[in-house]
Length: 179
Image 1 (cartoon, rainbow, N blue to C red):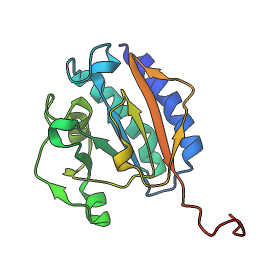
Image 2 (tube, rainbow, N blue to C red; image 1 turned 90 degrees about the horizontal axis):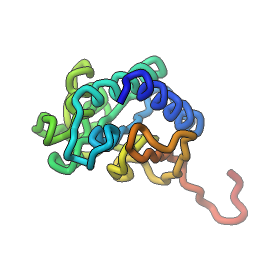
Image 3 (cartoon, rainbow, N blue to C red; image 1 turned 90 degrees about the vertical axis):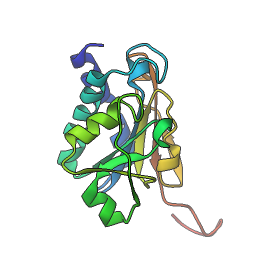
């Protein structure tokens, strides 16, 4: 996978998702990602630390200037814990857990987040307003209810299928309510 192509495609995907998600300063965006599938392998079998670095670097370059926090979901080997900045975890009162991701126990993007964040911690569960899922890693558990699918114009990043979610407030009040 070529760095420029990955970063260009990921930027297009992110712009599509951000346009639909209507995120605000201080919101949280979650990434679920398998670099194995980006490089054409099978999830969990061909991790690429380099690709993980590129993905996290690209997302931070887009989200940081907007004041949107990035959370990076780990793989099943760390129970899908999420890397976030300590300030966010403390502000939201999310439970910090004792684990540090490794290449084959957490995943390349989690390792990259630990290296690129200012003060990274792992938390057990987050409530994000939106996110992308690169390689069908199941981010739904970390996106606020009510979840709405977003269809980015680019459907694959390298060899990985891409889906996305945004959230919206619940509609309540029945047929006479206005929204």
